[in-house]
Amino acid sequence: MLKKNKGLMILTSVIILLPVLAGILLWDRLPETVPTHWGIDGTPDGWSSRPVAVFGLPLFLLAIHWMGVWLTGQDRRNRNQNEKVLQMMFWIAPVISLFGMGSTYAAALGQPPRIDRLALLLLGIVFTIIGNYLPKCRQNDTIGIKIVWTLSDEENWNATHRLAGKLWVIGGLLLLLCAFLSGTALPWVMPVVLGIMVVIPIVYSWWFHRKQKGEIR
Image (tube, rainbow, N blue to C red; front, side):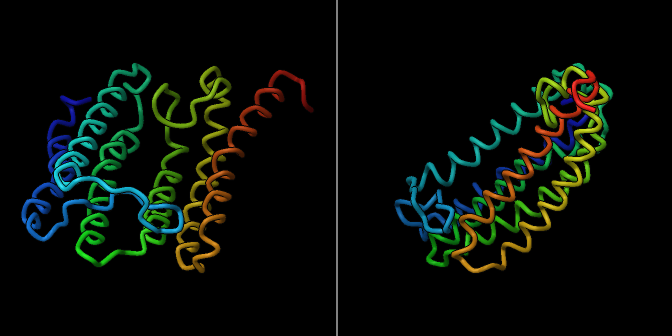
């Protein structure tokens, strides 16, 4: 997988590290401690030193990126995986790096963004895109809804991912709409939407398994 997508791997790795260059250029303007974590209400609740924020976070994401791609490539079931699904995997870490570090630098420079709303916009876009690809995802051990019933039966896998794809698109669109709700609604709307997107496909997979065995008519 790495050899086949060497150019894409280099491109996405460079994008992940672009915030390092931005941090070096902004170094003298950044404070000694930089906000690097926000609560669900958008308030900073975690800080890191300037070197850790500028160098450590992008390098950590780069390591996660390489590890994720490597593990995906090691899965034999992914040898016949949908090419668009595999390529989507390459862009998750770059998007997180640009979004996360951009928000971090803006907050450090005294222009804190509404991180709660921006996070909902990002999640909404990401989940909508993933939802479109979930039905195309072939059975494997690293990508998708990996539970005992989907991994043991291809028909269950396909049915569950078709349903999950629809739910994730709807959930993604709802999260986009939630970004424009009042601040008091955000802390509980997002967990509810995410919970539905996760729980319903699992319950459906269990129900499908029992129906196949004739335990449910």
